Length: 376
Image 1 (cartoon, rainbow, N blue to C red):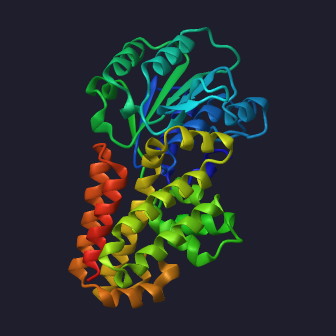
Image 2: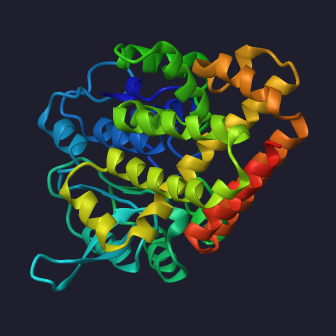
Image 3: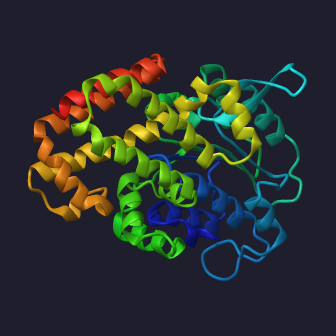
């Protein structure tokens, strides 16, 4: 795909290409920016460009055809490693013995960092430059971060570490000081929408615009949703529930809370294909659903934000859920701007509670009570 595959990040990419062209590549980079805006993709493209067998003329880039480029793209090159934050979830193996599997969403473990450092200290195998990427570096615990720090202080030759983070303040200052920081930004809608519409020609353009707006410039998140039609169906169900709230009884909060957790389950199964997804869900349903509940609540925050806009008579071009403009206009009659904003605040409160390990089912039911009250 080369660097051209990274949308809306010309500034950091220019820095990387100049460093490669001058053969003055730092030992460590820190890619800072919101989730899903292209930080990890840029790191992979950097590794390809640094090692491409046919980089072409001009500023370095990947050819995407040579053996090195294709193996790095598959994460299968011996001199390239990429680690992500993981969480272990207990499952039952086929024989009834406890087993474990890992999903994204928790932390970079000390073992992951240790294995990466051990590999970095081996002689270079086939590449020109070893590249090691740590996604979500802020999730390292102190022990893991300090182990990495020692390597950053005395890095192996011809080796570059790339740390990505959405929260640089959570990293050790000493780790930050050893890296060249590059800032990544949200991808503007004028770039994101045409890109996504070209990739998903079979999807209603209004839905594409809504997903792009909902993503808030997180192009990777929008792309992931549109690549999984089942998620769009769950989003539609979520919005139908939200639209029905003014016509529901307060006593239905418990049922609607259960509906919300069921939709989180459907969201998980729609995005995590395969038998493993079902096993993980069966093995620890509460832990799995917490990894997806934030996405569902983001959909509802966007809905009530649109309600507040409609109550204020705002420009419909500013709607996030643009494919539901008429429905929003109709439902907004049941609200005031203050009540719609109060609903957003209630959702944000629940998101904070869930990060604090609140009971998932109870939090969902309490939220529905507050949202039903807001619609009165």
